[in-house]
Image (cartoon, rainbow, N blue to C red):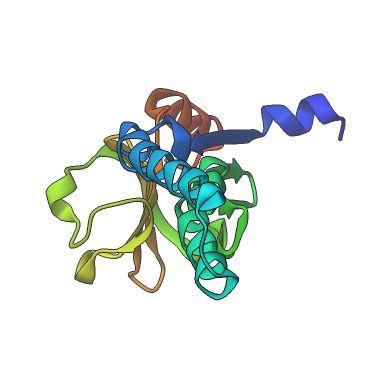
Length: 169
């Protein structure tokens, strides 16, 4: 199988956390405060035992905002499985083989369905688990065990067409 055939049999979607307005609303002020704190500490005349921990403390928001800037959710759907990964967080990864799935469809969802809000893997009680960053559409999966998994998508029509092509709907 050539690379072109492989790409035709794969649906891929990437969602970056940095494209969320909430990321910028939260991280920008924290980074600015951290930078001003670092600048004032560099000029400060104080003992090293006090100055060093304060430098580390002021650096934390800058480091966290930088790490979050690179977080992305990768969704790969192919003829064998569905894979969800959050890069660079290796702990959030899930593979679901088609033999484990009893039902799959693309649907619109409401934020009120979730017991928690935010990004990433969010358990939503008896309704299952959601993997998403933003948007209002998702790939709803019901496993053979009855577990429900919702994977957020910003390309609902493309995903639905791809699933039809695979004869999975």
